[in-house]
Length: 362
Image (cartoon, rainbow, N blue to C red; front, side, top):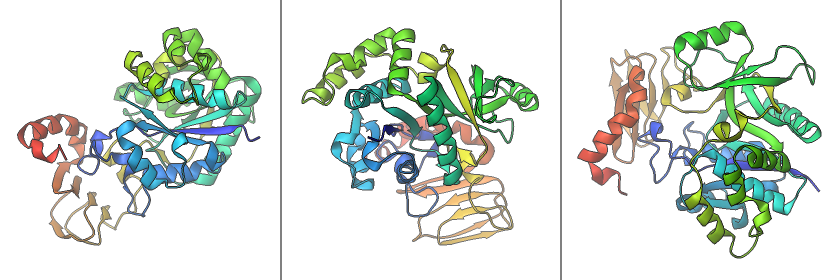
């Protein structure tokens, strides 16, 4: 039996990718690269190099089941796990880990968000295989750390021990997790050299993460515990819905990772982005000689530099005199925004929904 399993977390709403990403169809279901595949489809395909397709589960909001089925038509409905409401990553992982443990108590889990961009798939697979060996043989909670290329304040950081190499220097013991730092602190991290970006990708045995949940967040463990006996039974969804109604809204970092001592990081050095913003996507797109990244068949850029543009293929557009801007059109919604202001998108959307609610209730 192949004991490798994957859990794809696909329940987020991706509000900072508006107007393409909406609550009805968030960014994990979008073809943001213009290549004919959504981020979810790319994630699924990438993980088939890690585990058999039948061992891959998607956890998503119940309103997105149809989208998952549409984009992954060969996935059995029993492997699409639904959350009645968003309660962050710890309940999601507790649910999926318990269900898979009930199927196979020897399961090793790779937990991955559905909206990350990883283009060097062979490197990714090799790194995951190292992490799987470490998690399986040592009962460790393992995460992937990405070598930082800049003092980015949008990512969490992992501090690791510089001594005590475990596997050829690629696996390190974690000393500390730091949430998104300010710029001065991020610059210090880069200079120190033993801080990597926290990718939010985790590898562990189902039994190891369940033991950690029991130790560090017993109320959450008790709600979702495989000992409750409802997994893979006719009343599973009803019971799971009750669990989500009563559980805490908490990330796996706060629930477990920041407390546990048996945590390792596999050091990775490949192109990666959590695609939290349009700006983060810009760094991965092909650009013209003026630094413009353009998706759209009939977009003409004149005297414009360093812009990211995504327009429908049936739209003809002339863009003149824009520098460092984001231009996105989707479903009769248009955004033209200075790159420097994109962290304000959520704030702007509050005003937009108040003044033009008809565009947000489809």
